[in-house]
Amino acid sequence: MWQLPTFEEYKEQNKSDVARPEIPAGENGGAITAALFVGEFAEKTPWVHLDIAGTALLDNAKGYYIKGATGVPTRTLITLVQSLAK
Image (cartoon, helix red, strand yellow):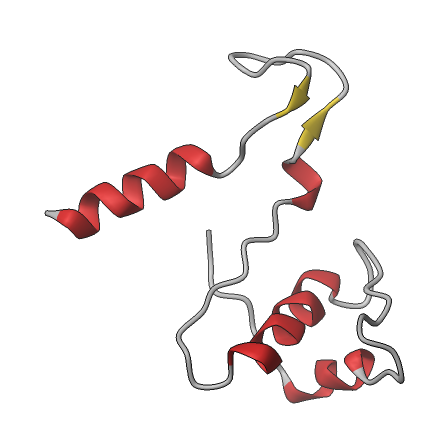
């Protein structure tokens, strides 16, 4: 995980007359524009954007993952909550 850069120029891609603009996957800073879109609604509330679309589903079993929904980043979130609870 890493902190995405949230450059102001990416906000231009989210301007739309409809509630949800089209966020192109894998091009033009899609993860960044998605994060900025979430941030517009969060206002001053601390927030994070977990961009898991690319890892959400598997066509075939791989390692300890079964075919289908992966649950990414469930293990990471559990570890985070456990560490914050200490």
